Image (tube, rainbow, N blue to C red):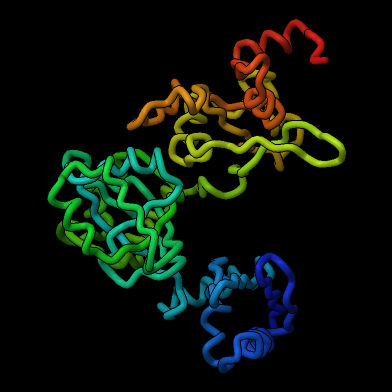
Length: 341
């Protein structure tokens, strides 16, 4: 039975095809190439939501949830070349401060020790005294051609940092981070790991499924707006840009684990008000103004961040007499019902 495929080009509808064969014909004509070369990016696109880039254009493909799930199962059970590859790699905390880097950058450039491809999933095992799988990341650029970020401030080994200038790089984004003894080296061996983790290894079977079972969130999808509403003025929405500390997925997760998802200013809980659609929705506000942050600053998710709703978040980014409102001041204003005009 044919499965309809939707093709999106640069966020605009390009075409709707009645099958992957039809989608391949449309894309081949668009790119002036053969149908055969279009099957793989379309399949990986609608099954795993992996975009396909051609020149300066981005193409995305979608099918029904049921069709995508069924095809994903078929690909992974058969070991098909289009199945999303899953890797396990080590990271030495004595050479590089990975947690510090994830707390500072939205994406990292990582040594390309294998031919990673866009959409691959990598689990990072932290060696040294930690000896646990701690992070799940997604490859968003298999081979970084230019503008590599060397993030020198997080390198602990100067010699390794110098060597890194000669490496090829892969760009990754943090998907989730966990802390559990169930992902220790000993536990991994109980579930199929043979030997030590000394280099990149492809994960399959029971060990892959065991590790994946602990990473249930995608910390960067759905809750990280680039902007929050501020006010309406002459029909045009003014905005406040959310800084990178508020967007950082690892810091955000730790903040919410500590405070919960209730707004710390007005006390709204979106799930209580809107039901299931509001579950776990909340913004995170960085308390200290950016102009007061010195070089080398690392965010503390408990002291520096606090959960707030979008409205309160916008107010916290506004100023009175040149000074940002504090969380406490805004809470007092709400509780005493002082008019805002």
